[in-house]
Length: 140
Image (tube, rainbow, N blue to C red; front, side, top):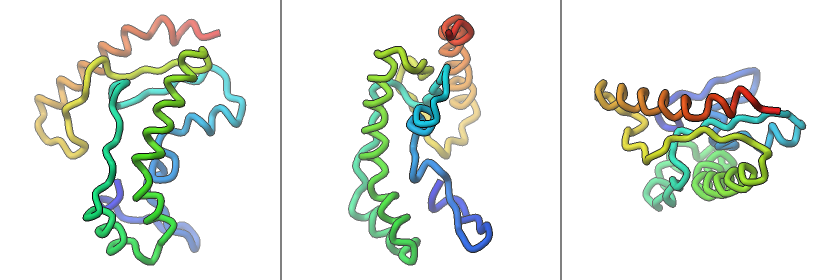
């Protein structure tokens, strides 16, 4: 999570969460001709990321200004995420992937500390997977 995590330096390069550049890596799997692709989403089918506010864009520029390509990716993340969600829906309709996702909107924030809310979300995820287990185990 940008702003919450530190960059990791490997060699001469600095790295953050890969979701900044590839929010849901289904394209990678398809391009590499992987079979039996199962996409596990943490948000329901209708969730779309809201546009990033100008204030947040300014924060990204202030914090990561010496990494202009990173700032660009951070500022365009919602558009890219929303586009890939549409692609995932189409790929699922075409039978190219199986999607496991929450049945209802997730109301738990990324920084949630309420243990009861987290427990309920875990139980919801378990129930959602149980509904899909036969389909996943019988991939051809």
